Image (tube, rainbow over all chains, first blue to last red; front, top):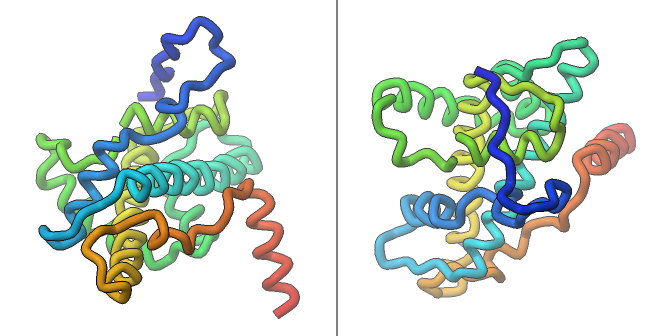
Length: 117
Length: 80
């Protein structure tokens, strides 16, 4: 379950490629499009900003969950840690949409098209 | 899911992440984008524009480290 991430194709592993640090812009753009009316357009700049924001959000939540695991001397972060981190960081209102989405994801487990990653 | 795992590993390379944690982060990230875009589009609609541009996302705070943000948050909580 805990597999290591694929290494960067760069010769120097210390250099983190920009695309490794961010989620794919196409996926972010597709998700943005789903929420907006059909006649709405999204500028490239807005997609890039959203791309930065969502990656920062992931790091923000994960670092909080990671800190909890470190304090509890655990090496693996689980779903409950993430939910706890969200609540701690003031994203309590995400709980219900997340529950709804989880139910939907279980129902359509075979199709991963809407996933961000 | 590999992209999310990569971002998490950049934060802490030694951290192990379970599949349900990845699912939770993925779902939270989707929710984040949805709520964010809805708010941005509201700003956009007020401008009577049909194109969502950088200016509509400009209520984004500057990039800050998580620990700095938490420190500020707890300081604000104590002060209030």
